[in-house]
Length: 173
Image (cartoon, rainbow, N blue to C red; front, side):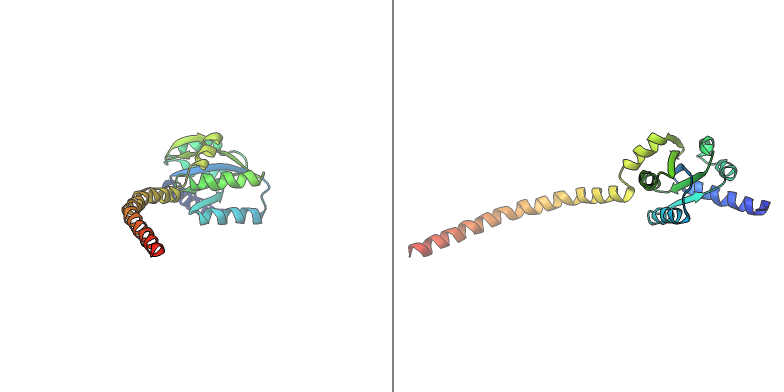
């Protein structure tokens, strides 16, 4: 790789860091191409990115970003998960690491706040942005449904009373 290619790679990685709100750093040792491809697909499906990179290039790309404090995590065979959603990268990588011992979470950062391994795992347990939106819509709709039920209940009761009286009169006749 020549200097121009390295500079382009650093620039690309730096722009990916700047666009992300969360970065998760993991060690991946001995992952097969199929395993790595499977993980990349899961990350893409969640609108997140996964990049295996040289530590030196990653450290250079971190300079000038809000994630500069992560440079000490880049030792050994390192990979980076990135996402704009604060929890999707952490959620996928932590879940994948539970089923594959070749991937180990080292730490990460959310909006410039450095997280250790436990912090990343805690972040992974939080609901994603889409899940929170779904819950919010459900909460907003719930009162309207309850109001509709309450307003329909008295009419239903009156109708049942009239029907019962009608049945009573027909049996007596």
